[in-house]
Image 1 (cartoon, rainbow, N blue to C red):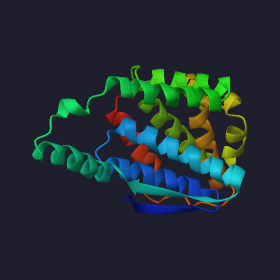
Image 2: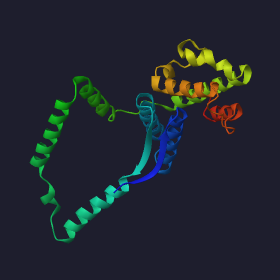
Image 3: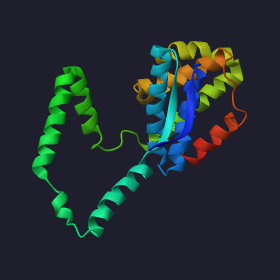
Image 4: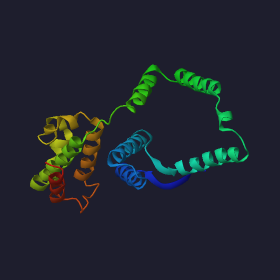
Length: 220
């Protein structure tokens, strides 16, 4: 039985941002490093955004599954060993071939080629080196510093031209690698649109001075 640690209702667009923040916080509490926290938060925000965009509403539930699964595994293996069973008796490669082959065949049958190819690409992607480097995070901090600089000099409405066409923006275009990350740019501009539209208040904890200090600490 899995237990819901937290539930975030997706009723308004700003709830997508809340879901992302909560996902990152929980990932941090579970011991994931900063890069994995970002990946988990991005995945959750994409799911939440799709739920809001295409279904109109939804909810994000953070479930405690790993601990419960560990209890099940420990109980089964421990009980088997205590009853003087041999673990090798649980190893049936031909059965795994039948089950795995049947599951793979069902997956290929039930999904179009596009979905199958995407699933294979994503699976192979798990075996590759991390796509993001330290320099990418520093560039992201620098981009945020540039955005906050525009807000300070021109006001919040000064962001409109930048978020409507990031490719032509004098702020975004400085970082071509970040521009190629369309999920990142879409998430950033969506959040900025909420600020420009008055649907989200800027946290008092965020300031251009703090971002500047962060960039300086990271070597820029």
